[in-house]
Length: 93
Image 1: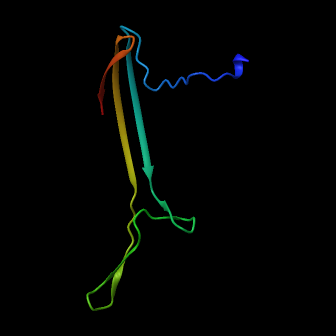
Image 2: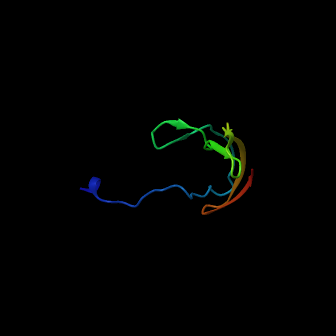
Image 3: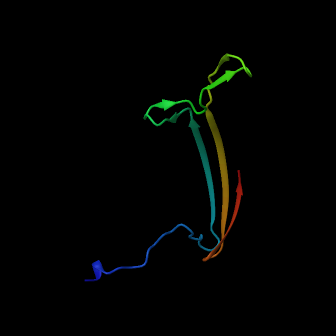
C-alpha cells in the first residue's frame, strides 16, 4: 500500500552545496540557425525575399538575403557551500 501512496516531489533544481564544498562548473554553448520553416512545411530563408520598386516606376530588383546566426558562449561558475542550505555562486560569461 505504501508503494502507491503519493509523496513529495524531489525537484532538485535549487539544491545548495554541502557546507565547505566548492564546485567549478564550465559550460560551452554553441548554436546556429540557417533557415526557417514556412507555412508550406519547407525550409526557407530567415529573412524573406524583398522586391524593390522605384517610386511611381517599375521594379528595380529583388534582394535575396543569405542570413545565418551562430553564437558561442563559454560560462564559468564557481560555487561554495556556506552552510547546508545556502551557497554562494560567482559566474562569468
